[in-house]
Length: 566
Image (cartoon, rainbow, N blue to C red):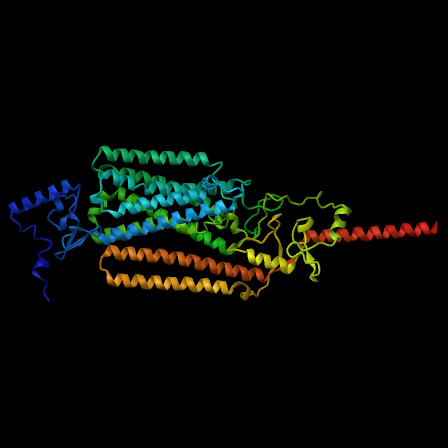
């Protein structure tokens, strides 16, 4: 079937207008554009005014519009494009602020003397949450309203996404630099930068000074395109510098396993072959490192291409430019989403590889715990004799229980002895989704464990676990069904995008809770199958005590024999 006349003449009907009609139409468009600060039609260039409103290419007498515009003549905005991107950024911002609040509440509950100010103190984790929240919110606002309807100063202010992004990346780089160079810092606890703080401040002072110049320039210069490519080039160079150091320290820490966080009891730095590596955490950290590095490099490339856009955009078909824009936005979203994903455990930051690289090691000695030396190995007979005295289990205090007591750690006194089953039951009840080595909560000494290949699944996957699982899966199904019904009932793209965004957010929370619930159940099953033995140090102590006791008995017997003989 032949195309209709309207379709054939769609791109060229302005060409067939009389000069007077064309002049009147041009004046109306120019006047509307000035009145609305680049309103519904936006700025026009003389060369493209006769084809697709200057916002697309005429291919086979049909307008192929730029992705930001739609319509037969590219004369309206592509609202699903703006609504979709802004919704995703708003979801990232919402997730980040929720994680920030959870982190503050968890730290408030851990304090011995709860204080809101102390719970809100600046740490690396909280600052990352906050910066991602601000960056994603500004980027969402950037795409909420089409750019042609926004004043230039607002466009510039809401483009603070890149400085905020570089602040987050530089904070990670400074933290990894301290992890690599310093050995006297306990990264298991939430804290902020120490030695690298001045470098972090200096870099960000220069960065935000550059951004301030851009904002000031937008106030005095109405044409942002005249200078935007200069600032894009500066941001590309700064981001490239950050990526280089991001890869340098990331490779040293997570690929070569080198740094101050790897040590043994004597303080000797262990190599990758000597350290006991947690393969799962190692692969997760490497994948996370490379994914973020690739997305940052992609953004550097796109910023560079935007800087040189005047040389290539006019020579490239509109479809290629649209794919260029889509990949650019996906990379922007991915970089922002990377931080909430890597910082998923808001309540226990010590379990995150990005903040605590010691998670890469399945066995690690805490430097704050004093190690045994030659002097401490010399035990007095009184200490040995106290070892042999009968103790009570510090968990059940059941003196009639026939099960023998063990001493699995360095604790002394009333908390030194415990029944094996009591300790294992206590560890099962107190275990979390942590893969760290089981250790004493008092002295910090790691338990010596004999692992079994067979897991006791019934101890981990309890009725409570299955109840939570059923509730979460039901909620996910109901959310998906509700979203589908709303999408079928409403044709408004804004309503559909908001529905999908809310459904995705609820699904994300449910999947996160479902994963944590499953991991906790697996940890409970794994702890239930272990066998905790008496510490080797305690066994040596027991042997010494027995030798001392037998020697003292022999000496006493010899003395009595000599006395009787005399």
